[in-house]
Length: 281
Image (cartoon, rainbow, N blue to C red; front, side, top):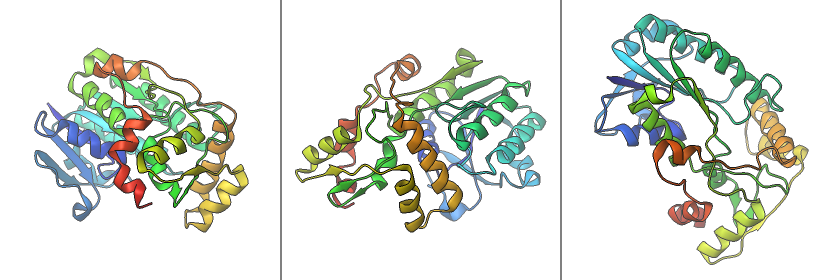
């Protein structure tokens, strides 16, 4: 049973590869071999989700697909190309990484685009499982600047999750997909916290002051643009600032424990594991 992983250079897919390497026959789709993580036990193949003709050899002999698209306006087209290649190759199950709150009436463009791809997969005739995880803790690794922590929560709580726990859930489903056929999961962490609490956890671990700096949606967008992010992504993240600021992500559940058989990591555990990076941010 060969498992194909898309988005191999991304935060979650890299961790899925680490979970599976050496335990399952696993293949990773990359556009540039020189940027691949090069893990032992992983077969790397070159292909481009924007170019359907490059996907045929990559999908040959694949039984199960991990489908992850980078956030962007082209995501539905890329997902469509992957699902079509999977149909032609006879793939027997697709595990798709979607987004929290994906729906046709989601408050962000990203959520509405994911809803389109989720619906296409559900109507594809291929057995499927969909993951719609909460906010990634790893996103905050790039939100600290010296003694300041920025973010898109406003003053509300979010049940954010460590990407390693998303990957553990994904890998468990890929290894035994029949148990999860037709299921939609929304993995969260074990607690819903504010960014004030997150800053306190970081400060406690590092032994140095860290303060959360709230920003309006407009300040969020402008700051991201000044940092060099493209306009589309900056505006979408500002939309998430509005959504999270309304309490949209303030919930937790037992989905990780149900799939993996253990509790997801707390934010304090995440900070401990990434203390070196945070200390230098």
